[in-house]
Length: 137
Image 1 (cartoon, rainbow, N blue to C red):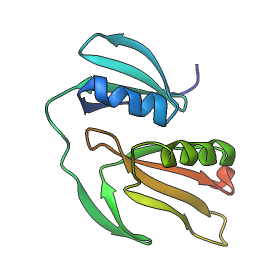
Image 2 (image 1 turned 45 degrees about the vertical axis):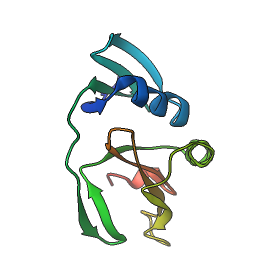
Image 3 (image 1 turned 180 degrees about the vertical axis):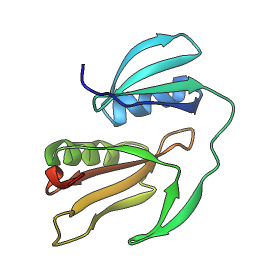
Image 4 (image 1 turned 60 degrees about the vertical axis):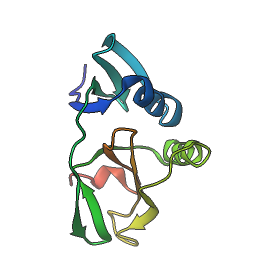
């Protein structure tokens, strides 16, 4: 097994949140404990959604392209997967929190990215990079 990142988040009502991750994002579920938590294969990483009453407070931070929601998490993906994900979102009941846009145009770090929130308010940033090999130099 490669180095896999694990993140656990409060997910509110799992019956409402799991379909967002499976039907809209296209993720697959794994191990679970009924009514308590479910693991999601989040592009090769383990995301655990916990049944919860609480929602994370969010704030917006100024960065190069404007204000972004913090905290957030997401995935880098190949261009074709990214475009397929955008198509699923655009035919779903969910709206972008921040619509797709390109950052760092004309540089080695050029990327297309968007922000969306799940039914419990967890913010996700999804992106595709023109040159993914330069991510960490």
